[in-house]
Image 1: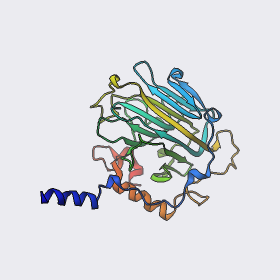
Image 2: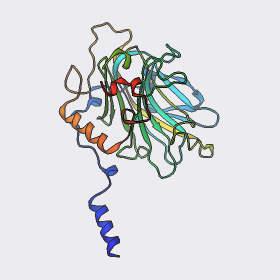
Image 3: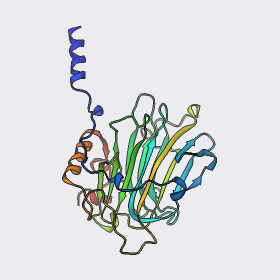
Image 4: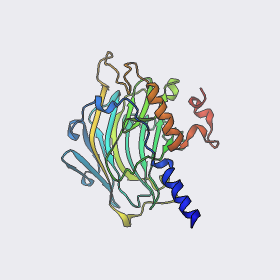
Length: 295
């Protein structure tokens, strides 16, 4: 009995790292960009019958008939792209809810892509947020070269809306969750960085072959529909049609980009506690194909 009470005391005094919230980042880039109505910036791309707009909150869902997706009306060559997203609780294995940049329609078989993806899960297990970057066809064909970093979150993404964003400039890509930077991907060479214009997308779809524990658990349509909600859309930056002098956006107070020391410290804090996979540290990967890991 004494041992049980002591264990409860330890748990109460020293909660698990998953309950810890990151320190304040000190700068909040989402506040610098206006929200827009869905139809001002986006259009349905597929599955229109699985998409509903209510007071500027978009609901999309997947069932055995179809998923759904949307796309920005303009391509961009840089910018800040964000949305507040709420996920479905319960069994969602095999299901991907995504917010991402891509030019796959303009460059089929040889495209660029920057991903925020929520990997569906089984009962009692947390969602995984996957960030990824594909460059010039590295996400096409059989020999896929992903640049995945995966995270657990410090909150339950099914309880409330949280803001997820990608900041992309010719120098860097920064992934943010509620204005907390979780990953910074630097341009170290043209061959390892996406530079061609991309559109902004959101979607929900069945990726049973790989999404949950490398495909161990599949989508189970006894639990359909699988629903995702999007709101607070932001897309601000240089469109593909903007003049060369278009000013780049930043995730920090510095017009030249980068992160403040405090933001960098918070990002490192998150990675120490919530990062669950880093492609650069995977001994099974051929790192001659990902030279940015060591350059």
